[in-house]
Image (cartoon, rainbow, N blue to C red; front, side, top):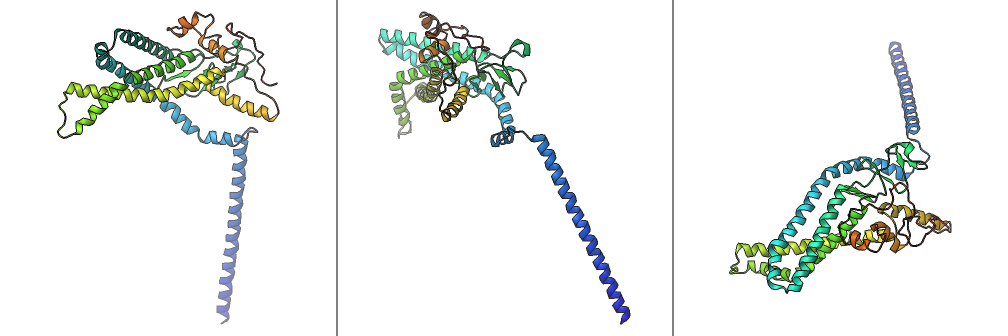
Length: 361
């Protein structure tokens, strides 16, 4: 019995020693994990800490891979969309010349024929000219040398001088003078800035006018063509030739496409017209809105330093210095440069009344 008792006591002591050793090892492992956690947290905070960091900065950092993907994909798709716009516009012009123009020459009066020929070709020339200039003209970029400009901020992305109204374009990967937006979708595949902003707006305006012209002029033809297409499914079907069927479908295609583009592009044109009237770009609208709200809380009034009044803003934007410029620079193709260099914003000579550009009163 005593031998069994001694053996039992020895086994129990051994078990207790194992338990104590396991607890020590477990506590030691927990302490090491805790130390590693605190060390990693300290390293992370030391690398990423910034007194200006907030929730918006965190969200921008999380979405940075998505921004990168969009920027690089749109660079390639922009070329495809430009080709698509040229193809669709060419198809509409071809339908007008092949299908509609012979019908107009046969049925319209000489006065209406002259008007359609004059207005239609003038509108087409304005569309082609401004579209070509918008996609080929550089928006303008600030000089890279820091000694060339004084009293300007530095862009935190390209580490270069950043004059007033200049913003960094993530798709172009450089700063753009008086940047409005990067039109990579279905229009330009180019950044809209100081030197091609007028071309972009003029293209949108004349394209909208051309689509409205085609929709209104082809309304009666569209109704007849659509009614003819509905009779295709009757029993027995009508005896239309291949040329007649192609004519009906072409007219319907022209009217639907022009009407859709007129609505969508017309809304965009009105939006930019409102911005031009206020002397703002698309980016400055958001900046001025925040600044207006901030000053309003302090009981102050925000005044846009680059706005000279609605009428003068349009004269500055279009480059109208004298009355004859409304004809030579607005109603006719003109490659004239905008006012200023985009680096400084002095009072343009066409402004009738000098205004003090105060930010707040």
